[in-house]
Amino acid sequence: MQPRQKILVIDDEEVVLDSCLAILASGDYDTTTATSGEEGLRLAAELSPDLIFVDVKMPGVPGMEVLERLRAADPTAVAVVITGYATVSLAVEAMKRGAFDFLPKPFTPDEFREMVRRGLERRVEVLAQARERAAAESPGPHPGAEAGPMAPIPCRVLGRWDETYDTVSLALDPPPGWSGFRPGQFNMLYSFGIGESAISISGDPADSGRLLHTIRKVGRVTESLAGLQRGDVLGVRGPFGTPWPLGYSAGRDVVVVAGGIGLAPLRPAIHELLANRDRYNRVLILIGARSSDDLLYPQEIQEWRGRFDVDLQVTLDTATGGWRGRVGVVTTLIPRAEFDADQAVGMVVGPEIMMRFAASELLNRGMSPSRLFVSMERNMKCGIGLCGHCQAGAKFVCRDGAVLGYDEAETLFQVREV
Amino acid sequence: MAGSDAQSPNPAALLAVHPFVVGMEEAQLRRMSECVTTLTHFDTDQVIFHAGGVARALYLIRGGDVALEVAAPGMGTRIVATLHGGDALGWSWLFPPYRWAFDARALAPTEAIVLDGEALRRCATEDRELGFHVVWRVAREMADRLQATRLQMLDVYTERR
Image 1 (tube, rainbow over the protein chains, first blue to last red):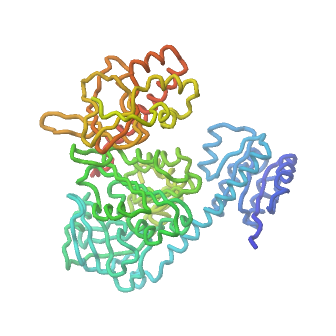
Image 2 (cartoon, each protein chain N blue to C red):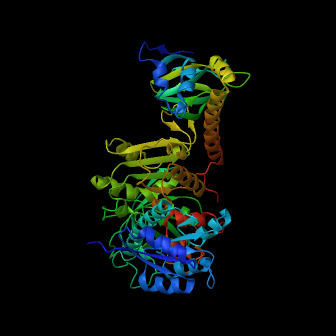
Image 3 (tube, each protein chain N blue to C red):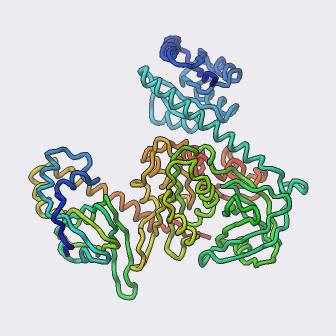
């Protein structure tokens, strides 16, 4: 039998608390009330509620501070702010401090019940993400565990080939003790004497015999890595980072949106989706590239497109008269894509501007931000949340990402220096 | 330039299920369907219209792929955008001087409902509510394409060093 879900309502007005109790009395919940922020914080620590309603204007500890302290104590806490002073700026402030949503007073029983339904649904999603993240953080013995997480393990290049005019793939002999990776994770690749760069793992997770990375030449380190030849040695640290939520996506429609080099970190997820095709509902793969010369993995795209159980679309930003496919940015594929926005999961990777606009189109279609995931690989240096180069607020992109829920990533998009 | 005309089904009936008219009221739809001239098919590579030609029609694409192109000496032909089933092709019929700005060519066998641009302008002038709906839908198409074009112009996939 499933345990009853716990709801905590914090409000200094007894009449509001009584109304909430009356509305929830018919549901299968354990509802607790608190008449002050202090009492609410104490009860939250004691009960670990699944959903918390917090009034903004209360004597003593104000609602916004309660919200902040709740989220600091338990990042998986799902809190809804309620207030009679509903303004847009207040709503924005509440969201910034981690509120799931905002409920203006007075509210009807139906509005309250609907918020409870959505809040509890969100709680289930958040806990599932947390479990996936925890599992990713212990993928098995770390190849560099003995030497320390900052020591790269020497690996030999088994093969190297050009993907496009500025992008190559390296197949590496996995380091001793390598226990695999989860789609979405990355390695730090070290070109000896030059430097290190975070590169997502782009191969099939089922292929344990070689470790694939696709590298775009954009700087000294990546040019040096891309210049390695068969038999050369480079250093590897990893795997690091959070995975794509493939477990959580089971039974749902999955919409994969890849722009440019963004297809590389999504390719392992696509492999896993297709290898376990019966676990998912519709699978849509929407790919954008600058031109046909920039398109990654054309052969594989052809194979995926040939499958009857995948809807794959490719569009180019620019094309000559000989191109027979779509022309336009990848976001233009989203409005007419066939998926059920009420339950679909989105996985988006590409340049940040593209991710923002793609996310915006998916949200316009009705996809919940809590089911939308992006991968960010900004400014990562150590890969383990030590150096702080990729830190923004309480987040380290390398440790808390690179795969992040859009509700978390959206704030990072606005941090220009990360 | 017209393609081969089909005898059936009834193009006015097909209009009612095209995404362009979703949300229109029955009376407006009836009025608009009076402007439908034909259901047209274009073969692969058939030119639908040329830049500079008189824009006489709104094409509501039912299926197929259409390239909007521009040709320039030394550049060859560049595809600016592609349109597909459910899209509306052409808004030059709505604004003077009623001339197409780009070439349009079918990339695959394409079927479109053709509405007479002049008749549609007249209907929209006489029936202001219909006029609002038509112009609003054209404006929405323009806004979507403007946003997409801005993103294209940003050339987001080019890595800045």
